[in-house]
Image (cartoon, rainbow, N blue to C red; front, side, top):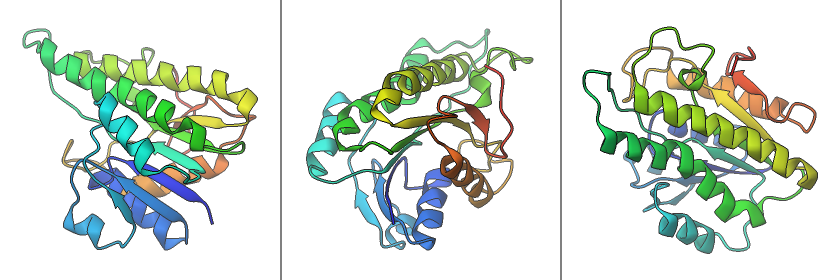
Length: 218
């Protein structure tokens, strides 16, 4: 049994990650801004009031979990805002960077002392952050913030390898959540993501994976 911490855990992919992990007997710490009835019904430990876009909230999370060993950190919290060249929202872009790019970095930095050698970190990102895969443009804030998140994941993989902590950069696929309202069921995406995390080791640290196992271009 290992201890998994999942951010953005109250709905969508985060909720299903918690459900799947608990079902196989793992210890789950679910982190979110607000609890939800579905998350509460799982019976896992829930830490609320955590906005990953806040330095103070990340510090509060680490303080709340002092002494707890975190074997696997899943940086899942994220946000999507629609914008185009004709309709740019720079304040919205800044918020996406705070949540999607800086959020996983600040949470990882805050919790790093509690991740042991042999631990794992998963960055739930998007292939929309792939420069090579961008064939349709648009979504400036989301694409840029996820590209930055991918770079965070790669730098963490390089910096933490000597500590024997492996890092995966993971695209869940197009998932039917409140962000998208189309795609595969969240439970299917969660199962694929967990399979990739299980597969993660120091030999493949820094890999950009689709949840189905495909290696994606940067």
